[in-house]
Image 1: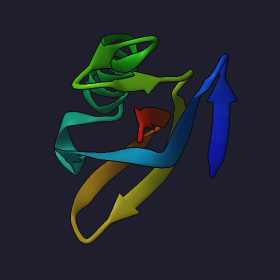
Image 2 (image 1 turned 180 degrees about the vertical axis):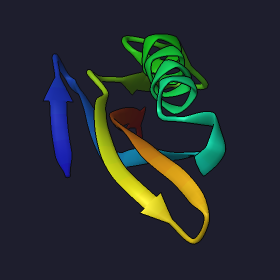
Image 3 (image 1 turned 180 degrees about the horizontal axis):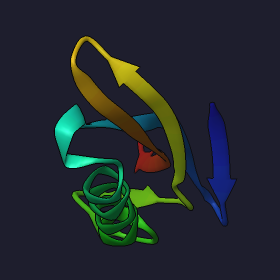
Length: 82
């Protein structure tokens, strides 16, 4: 989408970073949640290469093919001038 800031036009790209956390079922769910919390903390408000991360969400998927799964979903945007 096109956004503007002052007199220079900007093009804003939006997207999501998806992180899948998988731990063995025998390890329980605590490790998976701890990893998901850590990943969310790393990306919350992070800025790199023009990308600005927003607040992540953590989604518990549960048992998947012998693994326990959580997903961390991080929305972001990036502005480029043209």
